Image (cartoon, rainbow, N blue to C red; front, side, top):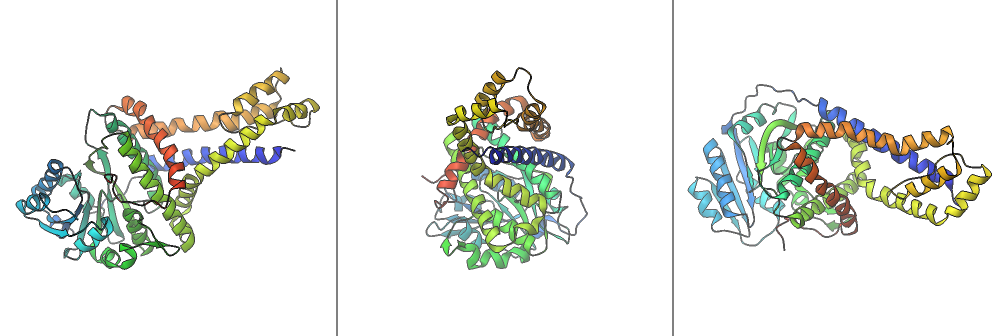
Length: 422
């Protein structure tokens, strides 16, 4: 016999979790305002470290030119690539280090940081442009208790659809990151542009643990930026999101490239989640961090379970109707998209629905939908240009992220560090 009580509890719990999640993220995401201070650091204390692999040459030169214009020290590591990148770097007064074979981003960072002698190191992607204003804004957050400061990532304006769904995805990620950062430290300081204390991260970046991370004895290429953020926090420092330090990066070329990126990021999230549970540190970042990563990583499994229960109910609908006729069950037992069929069947039996039926419908259908409205409002405040168009096309990102979460879960052992891989 169908376990209706278990289904009811599952549906209510899932709905309450969803409502709680959106309310918390919206409230604390909007409330987050990091404090600025006048620190003793200047741009002369910064070395920019960039790993490069098969980057668009024209964009790469724009990135290097922007750094030279600010007057920052520069080190670029060619991960199995040399010309024309070395010529460009030397042209603008930077140091180019060439690795004979491609070894991955972690090894490139590890080799490059050996040459960093300044107090601060700015890790920058080879397709991300930073301004003098953004550098100055990163510096004001680097207080004594802060180990790393991350910039807000935005897409370079493009007429391609990919600009809109990538911008939507970045804004959504930033809102979640702000909410968690309200309680002390960010979920992740994006490796696209992040400023660290050199003496803090250098021993870790040079270590074998960073160069060749392992989980359960197996070598895994985990997210380097997530790992570095975790390391900074575990060392007793804060990891701060500088919401006004905006940098611009290249949007993906097409949907497939974006899907590869999202899948890679999602795989990394699963692996970090497993690693945090294994090491017993998941609860050391605060309650909202633990809730956020647990909810997001368990969401695909909850969706599968919800779908399974819905199908089971539909296949046993005749049994459900017999129970209703006997008056044994007076609550709505639904969950997922298929539950509308069950709902219609119930209203055929009840011209005047019982209060418990209405209450169940409100909890499982109306309240979760309403909770998304303030979240959407908060998200709209972060989107800088063409809000409506970005929202509409941005739904593509949500669809891709949803399916990528399942694919990543089934193929988490597949590893690479670049969506440019063939």
